Length: 315
Image 1 (cartoon, one colour):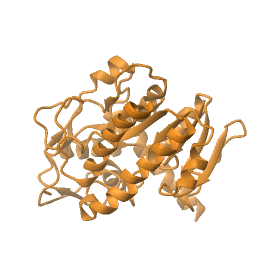
Image 2 (cartoon, one colour):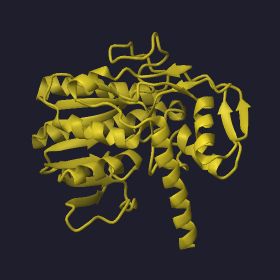
Image 3 (spheres, one colour):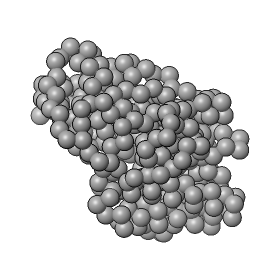
Image 4 (tube, rainbow, N blue to C red):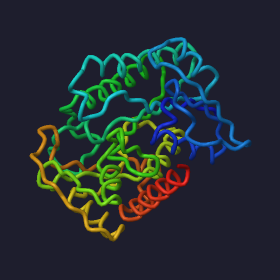
């Protein structure tokens, strides 16, 4: 099969791309201009790397032409900063996705897998773990945009027979996660812990999240592309909650380094706990998380240290 991955050069997208290439699929990877390929592809790997603007209909037409399905991983905003400019959030995410869907309709491409946010679309939990039936009351523009796109996917299914699968992914971590773009607590904590720097914690460290390793996420997307059932929305997480304090404890154990913690005032938008119930994905997709947090963290830390060594050797 041939798929286009919008955002296929990023942290999540590149890991999904590697998984699909290993399964023998052909890929067209759509990225922003001047984003280089994340690695050198082998001669037997059928990869087309293209650059473009998600808000350009011409670029969308070129990206979607001749593919069997679409993987939509692009988000132009982050949860913690999306409230700063909700108009930009809507223009670059929701409207851009509507343009994508319209091109899919024109080109008769019916399959799409969309990455939504298990960490923001639900808002403050009524009960935990959160199932897909939990109320959706996001408190950041990022979550509102994700939920809006979900609703449009339902609409396009009804109007145009688009076949969507929506994966509400928990807090991702793993190889290729970028520290400089503030892509999550684990990336920031690992970089500071390995450098012997103080870790800043908003609140008392009791904030609890569901952390999911990147290889498990890639496997979920692979299974979503094969799914023929009637369900649309799936939670993708570990199903286990880990507090920030417990997370740092585990990093200390794996690195054998003590970490200094700097506790700061809690942030209003941080919900106290978010843990996903992923039983629907296990039942329908045949998917469940296979990596424990300890094992996933160990792989991530080893990769990060190896990356630092490689960069030093280059310089």
